Length: 184
Image (cartoon, rainbow, N blue to C red; front, side, top):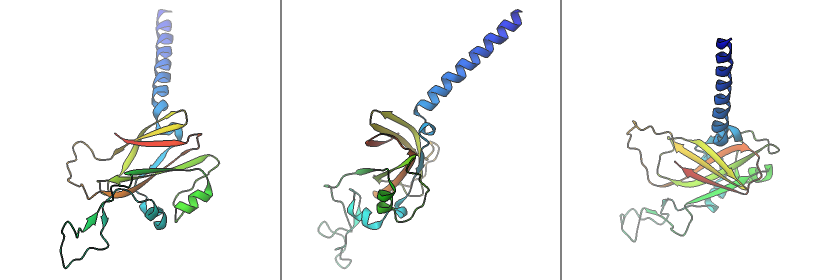
């Protein structure tokens, strides 16, 4: 009888622990929002859209004269500091999706899903990926926390000139108006 009570008590404790763990894991988990991040999507975006939404990245100077060589008056690259360092776009319908994307690289059911396009200045090569670590939703605002795939023991020296990177997050359709991205 005593063994039976201990066994029942143990099973109850395991079920409570499993429920708590599941609740904690799913509260901020990308799985809760059926979120998938595509880390490098510049080729997916219409070049005219990218040109109209420039960021504070380093761009080739179209007026650079190789005969003069680089000088402060004749830089190889330029950076427009009046431009923003990032932009975010919520895409909740097929028409907007088709205006921004040149190809349909991913299947999206806009009745149940939405796309978030995040454009930012990156100093990491396009060969390095990012992944979602967690998503927090409060009211009509969501925050996507993401991280580079670089491991602590990975000491590759791979920084590059700041460039304009596009990431896409496909996720469950929600009633939100703002999404911010935070690298952790």
